[in-house]
Length: 598
Ligand SMILES: [Cu+2]
Image (tube, rainbow, N blue to C red):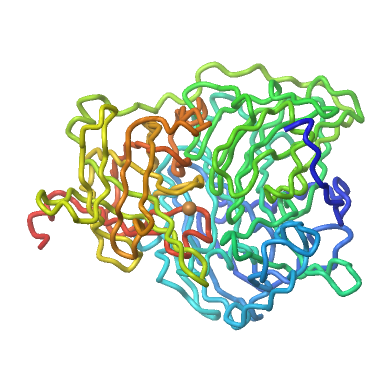
């Protein structure tokens, strides 16, 4: 907050010197819908003053090329694995959370006394590609274990029979997704459709600008200079890597020249773990009124909305489609995009008015800068705020939901001695009456009455599937957060409606989070120490494929799998969590096959 003195770190790189790169575009239609995308070892310069970094990247580019497609025109991609160099990132677990001066090691470049992880160093480049947000048949979805080696390839069919949206493709290999994505394997994918064209939204340069946000860290030589070598660093208190340098489209703290016009920014948080809460600043003061949000993960919202008063929150994998008004800026005018979200993110509010002083190493946010917009001369072209946007979003009715299958999942973190914690998605089922000693999650109403006793039916990824949604039927999922952090939960294949956020009070006994069992009390009442408002933001009232589940909260969502059957995944999109072990299978079945299931 403003007024509190905090030790500040001096940035070892100069902000706003590199122009924002615009990723290479591949217009899928020009190739008749058939593309080849190669995964390659390459070199990439993340900042003007940094040496080149070794990366693994699609077409050798960070980010990979943006694939632009049309609704209704299928795309077939041959993903060719041509990685011919060892894993390019140094992975390390620092021995302590802070250095000798008390600065959190994750805010600093270099290894901070950690030794390079030998297992990561021997990775040779097994890959599997997932197109996040795509409605595809299961064989093209990038099942995490269906990996292919250098020299091999996979062909994926993307029907593109879905609404316009910003998707992204990235690696999804079991156990090492945090490492392969961090090494550079991520790119954007845009679907366009008639509705967006009716609205006359900007398409392509210069007025449509994709922004892929990530955080990265680099090695440090003995003389203090940054080496450019990518470093993935965790510490004994934090299993996620929160790197100090914000990278947009592959450059640290870039600057983008804008004409006096309305721009369409397509924003994706492609970080491993860091949540952004974005505020646009002019002379240190917030100017959020310039931003109108028109779309979310799965495309257009029903109507334009303002961003939340504290700023636009994007957890890993969340997207926002924004119209930003720069039309009044005189040449030389500047707006800075800043991040006020501490890490690990827990939903904690932070006023936009304090954004200029958001730097806080103790929150693993040493440098809030994201990027800068700098006005250049041009003919003013302000776009009126559109009225109605999406015409195809129908929320499920009460009748739909009263007959829906209901599922519950507990998000739980298990503390482990001498090893990083284990975070899991615990699929719950009704416990048999009887044994009062049985390990269960007891759900208690406002007046103390027991509403449900839930046993843990599955925990780890390799446990047998317990979720078998029936094609075409509505389901209501409850995601119950037993942890102290926000988790962005992503469901493959089908977007969903966020129905509710409910405040809860969670009590977990000392050994409540076992390897297989869970004992906890979840009271449907606000925790007295809870500062979160647990509202559904206006920008979440569209179709989402990733939803933030905050501490002290149950998120309720409605989902209906409509087109494809088969085995898919859902998981936390904090990649360090997904890898250890916050991911589970779901098997979508046609109703007519259900009687034959054992
Ligand atoms: Cu998580």
